[in-house]
Image (cartoon, rainbow, N blue to C red):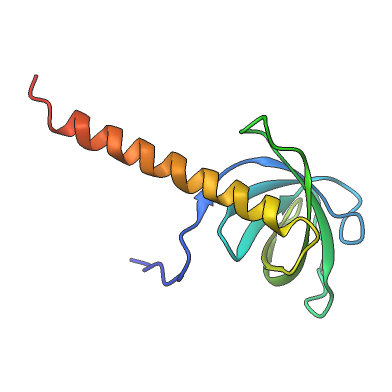
Length: 125
């Protein structure tokens, strides 16, 4: 059984990702943490881990959020015949506050769900 060794909790989410310097096609935001994210692109390619890329993220939840720009560096990638999944480290970015706020909203949502579940678990039917 594989043990998760991350310092920062990751949250599954979805959103459109545009990183034109990396891939001409939009990708899909898969998960996110305070320090990184995972993105799946609909084509196979190799990312240069020595470069920094600008990504425009448009989350599908929390309609109050606008798209935001973050600067990322690829840490790992996994390719298949028709897709590429990349784990990115988030660097100091123009919209870092918006990104942090977005992740905080995901954290709050998770805590609310866990609290509701605890209440339901305590009810005898």
